[in-house]
Amino acid sequence: MKNGLVPIQVHTVVPTPRGCAVFLGNDEKAIVIFVDSMVGQAILMHLKGASAERPLTHDLIGHIFTGFGVKIERVVINDLKKETYFARIILRQQNELGTKLVELDARPSDCLAIALQAKAPIFVARHVFDEAMDRSDELKEISETLEKAEKDSSEEDEDNEVTGEGDEDMPGPDEGFSSSNPNVDEPPRDTPPPGKP
Image 1 (cartoon, helix red, strand yellow):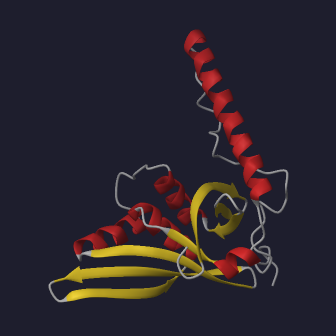
Image 2 (spheres, one colour):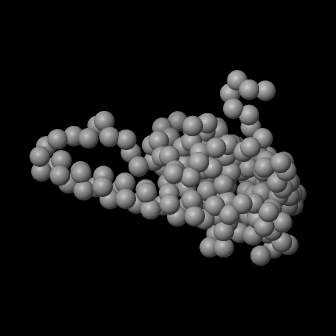
């Protein structure tokens, strides 16, 4: 652990009525960051090692970094204020003039997408990790539900191969998940519902 930083990884991304919940953490604890749907899909795509037909925004940023010889050193979720997370992205550029480190303020969602795309390490400041609510139980419930959905889907695929029937109308295991825990499907409390001030 470097200077009070906790190494973490992204576990999964779950759709919610107002965007996506990104579960991340380690063996000690799981935390949730709520992000908009577009960034949530980018995080999920990079998490699964998939790629889009054309470069998405985070892919383009990665290509620009590569073109200028910039490496993503690490990203750090460094603060939590009123249930809003803050992050920093640390970049390294090395050339004939020497090495330059740049630290930039960025949204945690963008940091996660860029870090996953570049396979860069992700950290959380220890005080943020300790303060954030532990969502390990929700993550376990989601993992079990997704495993069951994948198992049921593969069994159904085997049955359809025998009968020749398709399952085009069946939602995938990542589509429309809704936890029995209402907290998972809610954005941070400081985000008012639509139509309310």
